[in-house]
Image 1 (cartoon, rainbow, N blue to C red):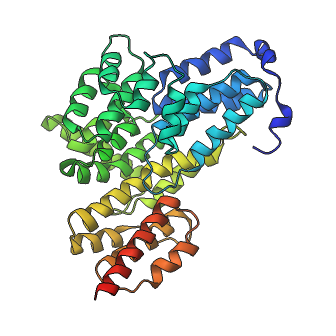
Image 2 (spheres, rainbow, N blue to C red):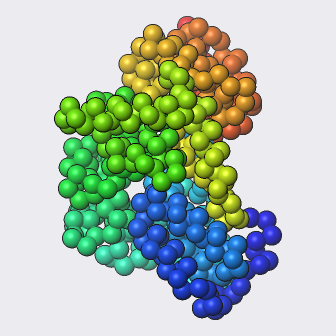
Length: 385
């Protein structure tokens, strides 16, 4: 973002923006779901490049990327750059005289884990604002707002997020099927299912998530409508056959061998990122969003074998299925997972995890915190012995 602030116009200059361009961005922001939020973020960068340097555009950029933060799924801290960028955009919006965006600040505080601050800010919002109910955890108000015929996608996502994180998987499934079926073709639905920590769906969802990420990385996502079935399979023999053909075609297009998905994913991500540029939402932000989902899927599957099942054979098989690469987040993930697995089963001392704390640069703080937790457990066991 360096050098951007000096090119900003005061808030009063926003009236000169091209109405058609701004209307398209507003429409994508209001649509909220991740695919539309990505498009809105892209369009803000296009508008900025075209010379629309004003507070109104910064507001839209912040709202689009905040929608991505709210819908991200990141168990490793690999997408930490997303909320940091939103914070920067909000600060820039304020610096050029834009009106106070209390709602956005409150939601971002919640994303960043500052629950107390989020609730304090939410007190300034209207009593019937779904964002306030979401931040305060007011399920009754959320249900009322989300089940209205004209409820916004954001409001419905707030309730779905709330139900999933409370472990109310049946309620989440019923609500999504009745009120939000379109979310089944978006990555946040996979994130919501995994966030519920429902044992019976974890392995299926985590296994499907890397494939779903690849599907949505493709230009125009031709297989997007098949995503609801990718978790549980087709409901009829015909649907099951169509799903198998689509997955086989996807594997062929990306030259996937066995379960080695990391290299095909990173290649597809590079191709998509090459189309994304601009100081407001560039290739780095796009990579952060998609990598959060892809590697979190692998992480949840690996943890399911390692922690939930304590299944040594499955843990070893999963580790060996990960691609071999000399660098990048894929290489770091494989190294990190193997190191944690070795310590968990007693096949290694603490040295690899200690080295990971300094040597892993592309995994986020959440991954390193888990390494620290493993080390503390190992040290307690050693002291007890």
